[in-house]
Length: 272
Image (cartoon, rainbow, N blue to C red; front, side):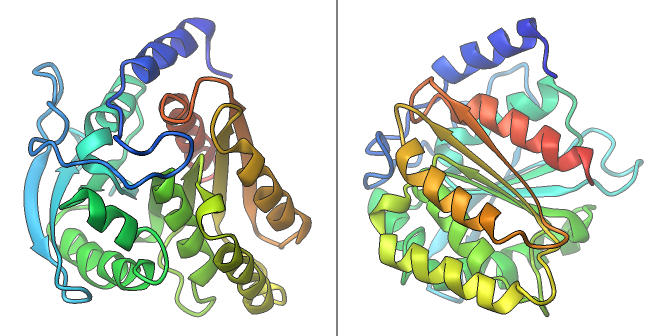
């Protein structure tokens, strides 16, 4: 259990977190890149800035990489890939450094607000997913010392919707992620595609189980009414080998991401 003092610190971080324009209430049309990864504090390590052009859709993405201090000397750390880096990079670096989570962070920023809603929703989610798993992950993992068997995917709002799609579309014969952090996902944006994706996941994985971890979180003032039935449907499938849990908050759609990311990462790493 997290202490009361640490919980208060997380809530302060949440209330001071960068707000993603247009994201409130569940999705919207995204935020605009800050150009510096969210004005990283001078007391925090400075993430490495990259730029990659995706072959899958032709879009050029700003990318930031944060490594734990002992990435080269200790065991290869798990790697967390996350969307909306222009809004959330600083916050996630604060979480992993402040609470001692030994992970590498790889944040992908949105080139434009409009591109965000192309990439994170279907049908654009398909080429964006291909960029992450077939281009970005091999690029990062050939240059940085990480445990590629412990890839984690995190996203909030429309990014959480994309995390759901990634979970649904993973092939049992070729799983790309070890764990998923699905934060206040805006499942209301594409309910038919979500229902079809969840059903397809069950059809593909029912016999052999689902050997991954998926952590869902939602806020009472955000998308809880839409996340709860999806989580309940997935949990009711009773997949073997599947670790999952659900955290709820009452902080607001954007502020919930800070304590939820902490809680979700703690849950995932406890079973790593």
